[in-house]
Image 1 (cartoon, helix red, strand yellow):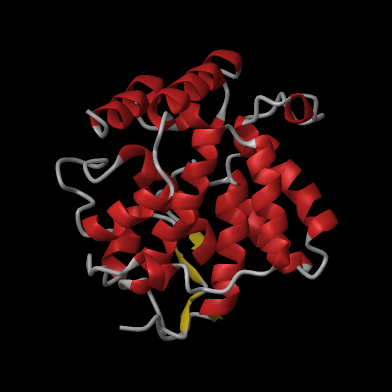
Image 2 (cartoon, rainbow, N blue to C red):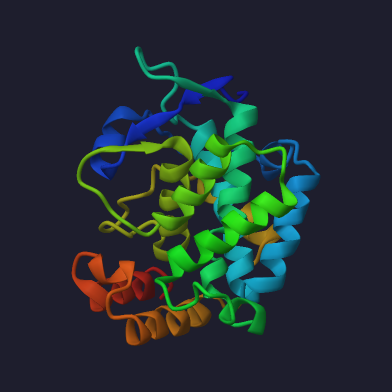
Length: 252
């Protein structure tokens, strides 16, 4: 089954509302189908920039997020909803790649990243500002709307909202990142079984292994909470303990 040609450009921020609107089914999508989506030299520049700055296991996480996002698009992401502006697969995947691969720049431990003037901000803002600067330098073909969507999606990817509207890119990076960290049981046992086919995920993880991602994530997240008590993750329902518990249980 091919990808739809267009998707809703805007969707509900609320995850329950989004799931009610979407018609997601965990159909198997071969990894070869997902990676058949064409990338361009500007994507390569973002890949290299993220690889240089993002911790190794975190970098693999960013790439898994992109392909998880594509799998969600393939299997029932809202499309052709009456009255909702549409975005083409080509344009959405173009923005999604930059967003996913750059979304954890704020996790950097490099001298370059830690020396950036935004380093004291919550990691989502720190990384978003670096992504903004990178895109203006390395992806000049992107216009203000495209860059704005990518950067705003990075800055808000860990935030949860009960109402309002997200771009398709923003919802996809938030959902795929949450899923890759917290797994199929993130919202209760088997709660996300419908999101991504397990064989598809297995193929994604074979290509981009998890490695030390769990321990690396806990170290980075705990440091974020310790160093920045007002970080965006502090607003996660239940705080640090709840977030770490969900993430840990998903990998036991």
